[in-house]
Every structure is written in C-alpha cells, then in structure tokens.
Amino acid sequence: MPLADRFGPDGLARWDRDAETWVTFDPFPMRPEVRSAPAGLCVYCGASTYTAEGGKLHDEHIVPLSINGNYVLPEASCRDCEQITGRNEALIMRGGFRAVREYLQLRSRTKKRPQELPLFNVNRIEGNKVMVPIDDYPVMWMIPRFDLPGALRPPGHVSTGNPPPWSTAINLDHDKMAKHGITNFTTNQMDVFAFVRMIAKIGHALAVSRYGLHHFIPFLRHIILHEAGPEAFEFIGGRAETPHDSEELHGLTLRTLRVGDRVLLVAEIRLFATLGAPIHLAVVGEVRS
Image (cartoon, rainbow, N blue to C red):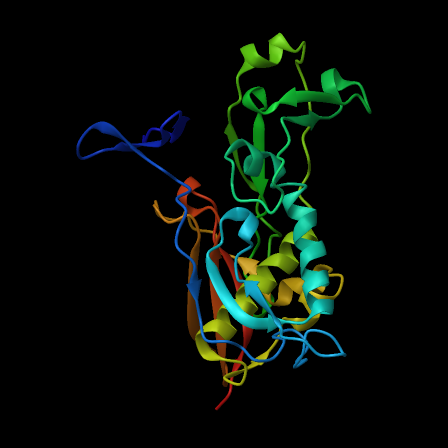
C-alpha cells in the first residue's frame, strides 16, 4: 500500500517506491507567465472594447491567478464579463479554497493576508465561530467530483450520480485544536455550481488560447455568464479513475472526441494535480468542419 503524501516545512514529501525514501519538492512553484496570442475580442460575449466607451480588453488568466495560474490569454475580457467571472471565482477562493490558499500562501492580489481564519459550529454549537491562527488551522479540503458529462455518455449509460468529493487534510493536528479548546468544527464549504462555472471558464479560455475563437462552436458561454444548475452537467463532468502522480500544480489538456456525427473539443482540467486531486472535463464545443 503506497504511503500518503505529507506536508513538511520544506514542501511536499512523496514516497519514492524505487529508491525507498521520501522525496521532497515544492508543490506550488512560481512558474513564469505564459502568454498566448491576443484574443482581440471578449471570449465570453464577443465585445471588441473593454467598455461601451472604448478601451483595450483586459488579459484573462486561464486558471485563476489566486491559485498560482500562470497561463494568460491577452486582450480577452470586457469589463462586464470580467466582473461576472471575478465574482464567481471569489465565491470559491474566499470559500472552499480559502483555507488551502492562505495556509500554503498561494498568490493573492491582496497585500495584507489574514493571520487567522474561522472555524464554524465549534464543539457542535450552531453558530459558534472561533478564529484560529493560520499556523494552527486545520485545512479540511474537498473538491467536487462529477460523473461523465451528458454529452460524452455512451448510449445506454446509466448515471449513478456524482461520486463523493475528493478530500484531503492538511495540518490537522488534534493537539493544536485542543490548545484552542476545539473538539469538533466545520469549515468553509465549496459552492458546487460556482465551481462548475469556473471549470467551464477555464476550459473555454484554454480552447480559445490554443485554437482561437473561430475553430469551434462554443457550448459554455451561458454557463460561464449566468447562474448554473443541474443542466450544466450536460457539458461539465469528470473522470472516475484515480489520476497519476504529478509534479505539475495544474494539468490542462485539450482533446477532440468523435461523438456520433460530431467532433467535440474537450478540456481535461486537473486543478491541484500535485496533491492528487481529480480530473474534471469541460465539453468546450463542436469543432467546425
């Protein structure tokens, strides 16, 4: 049985079965910025200027900067769409991803970072919130996992629903909790449909960065710009198999798949691949003939 990865002061330690030793590496290296060709239009709504009054379109990080995303699509977002995608990503970065971002000191546009984070319903008392220093904070982290997107399910496929979320614990130390008089708690929860919209945005922006705006008929713009519900799972989903070990923080791949008489463009997105997180799929669009 493989030994579980563990965090230490020098980074992430992973057991090397061949060498029979622990190998330590930085799971969150600061990669240099990689810029694709400018889009020239807002990739979400098609606007040609930042506002109706004019101005150059803003650059778009394909994976959010706040989780160390380094791929940039220049001149790709108008102000209205930038605000929509920014508000949605904030729900995740200040919610389900907040603790891991602060504990691991991932990038932030905010210069002053918090020294404490809240735990909720402490000791099973509803509404009881306790602020805990970052060094002692138990990062109980979950990422949603999904069934195959509806658009990729073979005939006769019977969905059993989405699998349980992927989860891991970082810095869970019962002695540290006892020091604060804490025996039970909950943490910030993940907004699942905000996460779905973020996966859609990453997939769409990735496809535009590789192929341009006119290579495919886009499927995901409505999900990105509007509130998402269960219908989004026609195009957003996941893969059930256990992913391989990776030393890349985020994995991004584009594939074409023939489904019936259509050729679909599919993005494979693995955020936090270093930590063993799952693969998500975004059916970005149909390739133009």
